[in-house]
Length: 143
Length: 141
Image 1 (cartoon, chains in turn green, cyan):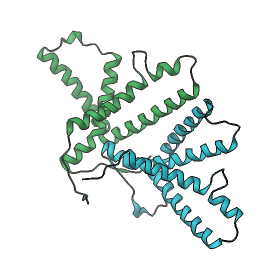
Image 2 (spheres, each protein chain N blue to C red; image 1 turned 180 degrees about the vertical axis):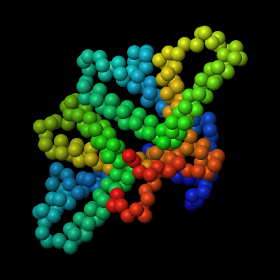
Image 3 (cartoon, chains in turn blue, orange; image 1 turned 120 degrees about the vertical axis):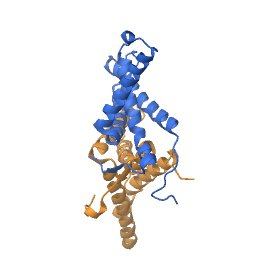
Image 4 (cartoon, chains in turn blue, orange; image 1 turned 90 degrees about the vertical axis):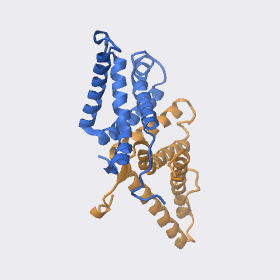
């Protein structure tokens, strides 16, 4: 029987990678600039209305669940920190000369990747919190 | 080895909720409702079974409200209702067939039950967060 204080080791890379992949799948399935996304399918004429509504509600439910879990885990401060870490890594790479600062283009894909990263890290953060400090993130009922 | 919540755990809960719902009422004259309305000889057994069903319903509803709340119930109901709409749109379920429509509605409610009792497990597995309720508040939900 696992005790309440059980603190098993976690695999950080696979933990984040799986959750990042889940968040990115939902975000990019909802909208992406390539023209093959739920947004494009839903706004084009024709097709099955009921299927569009079903997929739309499914994506909305998934997004709501993921955003809520990520947000209660890291909060505004966490979102700001993850975003500033991303900015800092871009500056760092520019500083190392891996990429030229003038060449950095912030496209829609970049923004979507940032959103996925924030959500992916938010989804995994509670595991890290528990592993590092033994503090469990507890949710006191839904809103 | 710790037991993790997996597809099988979810399927068991979901099927259990569907069985509970259809045992309480189904449109094919073989449910608890039809039993108590047609048979008047086994009152004691009917009360016992009725209370058991009631307890299961209360446990599942309380778990659902605690786990996904009003917003979650709304979203999940909309999700499964639109799935039913897809079935009706594609002539899998005939709208003229009242029994089939009632059955689909019962399965929609049972699916909300199923997601409600599973969501706290899914949330814990997915994000490591623990759902908790302050039972000392003596709130009914």
